[in-house]
Amino acid sequence: MSTIIATQPTIAGASRLSSPGAQMIVAAAMAAGLAAGFALSGHPAASDPALTRLLRAMAVIKLLIAAGAGVALFWRLAAPIGPWRLIAYTAAAASMAAGPGLIWNMAHIAAGAALLHGGLLATILLLWRDPGMAQRLEGAIARRKGGGRSYFF
Image 1 (tube, helix red, strand yellow):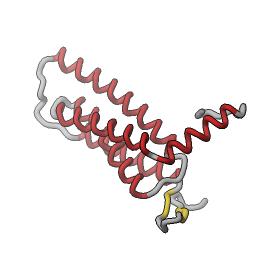
Image 2 (cartoon, one colour):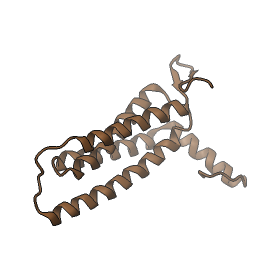
Image 3 (cartoon, helix red, strand yellow):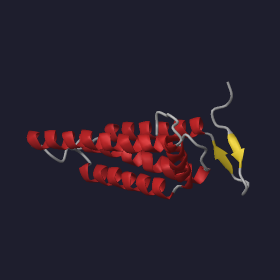
Image 4 (cartoon, one colour):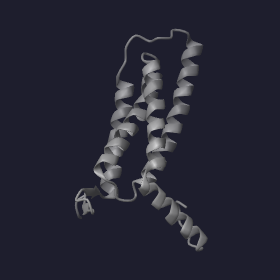
């Protein structure tokens, strides 16, 4: 089996990471962010059981939204990516994964909300401005118009 992180030379001389390597890096960052969010605890900000249930339900919903953004990110990472863009995606993914864990613990609710929403916004903006995402979408549309079948467009 070949190495997980293969590089491809580009015109500017920078290397691009292969999709399995990039996906593994982002998955590890998301797992670490989620684990860190759940591991950090302190004095709970809310002592009301009804408020705790409400905020934990919202944390689960926010985790599902972050998972949806993560799926879009993994779909993008199926194509090679440059190192700087991968660093930005990794930071955004780790941030949005840490947020629900912080909210769940009820100790750092504001920080968890800021991390989650900041990470989601960063992920959406990065995907929107990424030329690789545009190429993936154009290819998917061309396959659909050509009658080709694919599981992800």
